[in-house]
Image 1: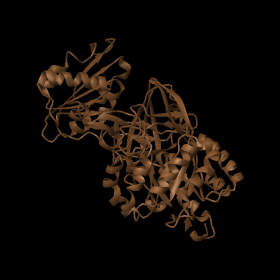
Image 2 (image 1 turned 30 degrees about the vertical axis):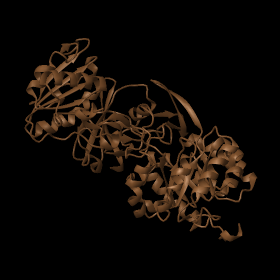
Image 3 (image 1 turned 135 degrees about the vertical axis):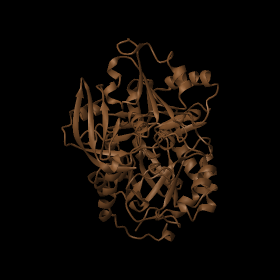
Image 4 (image 1 turned 180 degrees about the vertical axis):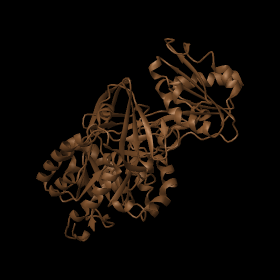
Length: 282
Length: 257
């Protein structure tokens, strides 16, 4: 057992260092063949916004060298509908569920977090993706606003290219753990023009490694979760050796569920062992 | 939906087009006409995305896919893969064509490459003793299904833009009489083709009713199980995931705004 939020009184205990990244199992309602909730230490839902979003029109997906570029435009049915439809599913799942809350208007994420109070026994935490173009004060402001709204563990997902720049600020603002990181955005030509959006695939892994190296120099007192370009056990073990507590996978599950299942089994013996921290000490 | 290792059992060449027989009883027994299979291409992680194939023949222990020549490096790998290669297949995806319960006369209509994807349905309907007409339009004879590949009982109409086979032009002149004859329609082609088909149905039969026409909304899939949201289409009154709601839709839903 590993606690991803040791400084939070609620804690976030995971049984496996492998986390299903945002949206790989939808809202916990869609699963690929051969994979189950118990294969993961936790699952992160697809992004949830305060109001419904129809998302981007086609085309949304393009293959790039060594990966892909996917822009869904934040397609989701909105906070209220997601909660109504999926709260029962989350209660049944045998692994912690982390809601990925995305902003639109300022205050949206805090508003959603405040409305999670009745679900605090069902939801294990919230993940907050931070966009590429926010500055330190904006990042601190919305993390702090969510911190005030909910006692649930907050996992701040840092943009991979600016992780070291933002890390300390978001921790001071109230984040309990850092996801490193949100994949770099890119653009790639398709027949109808260009698709612009976050990149994925093994090509992204060097960005993740670079960000982890920079964060290691900061000596942060918070768990790190590596995300982006992790496709093999070797990738995952490299991240664990670099001091992360858990690794998150996404594209691997979409591309090859059987390979993801093998990774889920093979990574279990490498679960990081950490000393228990008394929340009262912080 | 299953993920299986299937053996590339045989390769048949017709000009530059390849027909690949992929052996997997666990996949074949699940496949319905119109349901695609996602096949991993390449030996490693590149090319990254699986390629989407709509089988053109379904057997008890295998299925056949058609791989026409194109510039895609993933399909190029598949064309080069030696017989005996193990292919990683994910499928079947979504919902395929359903056999109309009341209909006796079925019109299958397709445009270009997509018309090949109707073949499993044509064969299944013919095996059930239904009267089947297949009408196909294409740019050239290369895309046309040879008559020898069809059951003897199937009536076959062909139109090519260059007039190399069948009528010159498209199916527009032939469709009204075919639609008056048919009591169910099954179609595969691009959206523009469905718009033209819908217009002809409404002008021939006054109204397009639910259950009359099924259409295959072809798209490329990534995960195939509803998570990645890459395959959405504006159908059934919203932006829907084709892998969950389709790829075969009632034509009424395709044009429901």
